[in-house]
Length: 544
Image 1 (cartoon, rainbow, N blue to C red):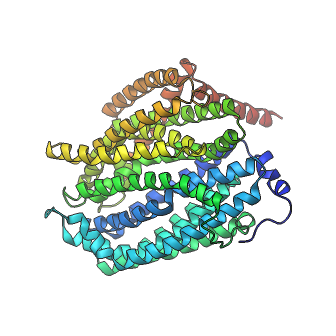
Image 2: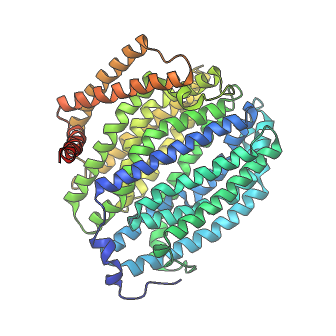
């Protein structure tokens, strides 16, 4: 594998000492990129419901991704960002870029070989793998499973290119190249949208052609990511030395993360198994609800932790513990400040939110919207609990403590199917799936919070006071939105519905920020002061 020419210290001086953009600006860039990615993703999902107008093909399309995604997470998914990025960031922070490049190169080489083997086996044995969904249950439609198995034959090789693109993103994140990593996935979504629109249709052939188009889109996306980050990526070449001590250390650190990420996807597989027990279209409705609740979670939380993780890894490696504690405190509060009101708004207007996002044509009926809204209501608390879990998980990964997130994941793996089974048997209906997931998240959140806060020098501070103030603000906001919805329901044509729900969103933001300012929450005053400075600057420029 090619290594950096020149001295190690010279090569790493820029990334380690000159961070480039500030934390706030980096988080803003990542957040904007994530918003655009999510918007393009929603357009993609709408094209799915348009081109696959029959529920059986929508369910088959949604289910086709489950097993390939599970294999991806089982082998490499979570470890790329949560191991490679913090490890390389830490090496850059202490001036050991050459060593970091060498070890990450070995990591890339090993996982590429493993993934090639797994992708081949998954493609060959997709039918018997998907047949496992129906074990012990005759109520599951075999045609849906057959469609998913056929479509997945193109998605197994697709995850190989997803892995390569993710490796590029993890490395570029360590070098703080957030613009490339944030906006690159937009291209991927655009290409996938084109594939679905061109090849989509209500036949098995169309479904397979669509996933084939997605495979081609993923390969092109990887080539673009590699090209845009060529200056950093050219250092990494094939180097198969699995006996390297530093690689073995990194690999041991990665194993718990791999298992943790796999557990998350296993829970998704479990939930989709239960969704197959309900009416046709439930799998797609569950996918819609999952996509919606993850919008605020991804936009605010993942954007913040994407910037936090390499910074925290560098601070911990440099033994700047007070700075690390301040960083996670700020990250936790900033993420929760935005996700708490988002959860409340979605809970109050769950049906309207689903219709606004997905009901763009007659193929997506009020019945489809109600199914997705039912799932979505149960997910609302998960928006908040997943925020805390993700911040703590990334903090553990940044400091090299990967076993506790694994234990929390195993706990969730036990609780989730048991809770689903109990609630389904109790007659709770489709809501049981998202409620079980939310309950599982609460248990994991409590465990992670207790474990991390035992490290007093790293523990976040001021969280309880923040939560009390945020809770009071969001209760008032939710009350105002509820009353407003009673007097002005979202009705009429599509444009009218969008205008009404947008007005309610603006009112919700204004009320929440106003109450946060009254309670003197730093997160609100920081945004308000920034807005005032920009406003006054523009006014002064006009007068000049």
